[in-house]
Length: 220
Image 1 (tube, one colour):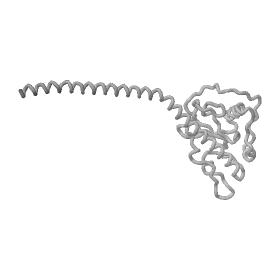
Image 2: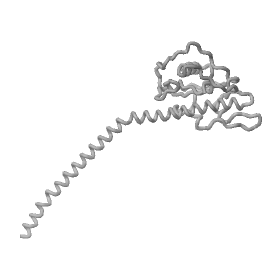
Image 3: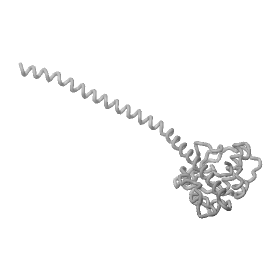
Image 4: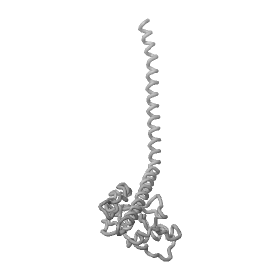
């Protein structure tokens, strides 16, 4: 009798173990399904995350570029002979005074281009074709000339080129991508631009390409 009762108890154990194994199988399948859905959601969200990251970098580039433009204006205004800077280092060292002391006009963080892998701004001179294109774009965007009223800067840098028959040209030039790796030529400069030649998400004065954004005191 004891042996039969023991055998009967074994017959009840076996179905319970099979049920537990089945539950583990269903749990594993459900887990794999959830992971697959999460992977699909991440793939779908990747372009949006990438766009938001680029937008943030562009906002930072505009903020820093405008800081550089203001530093150029202050450098000219505060310098005894109202001279233009010849390098970013001039701005970092500060505007010279009649004494030995220099006045800080640019913070180090703004001296770097966040859109470029090297972090180096491209220095823009008044004769640079990019500056002429930017002036044309600003006038078309505003519908009128937008020139600085800082007489110290104008007396040193001169008036911007006179443009006739400015139309809303729009941005149709295809972006080559990559970066401008050319060396900055020596001499005085009136603004900076990014070395990134990629299309932008944000438009700056209606311009949708990084290297076409010129940060200069002329139009502040």
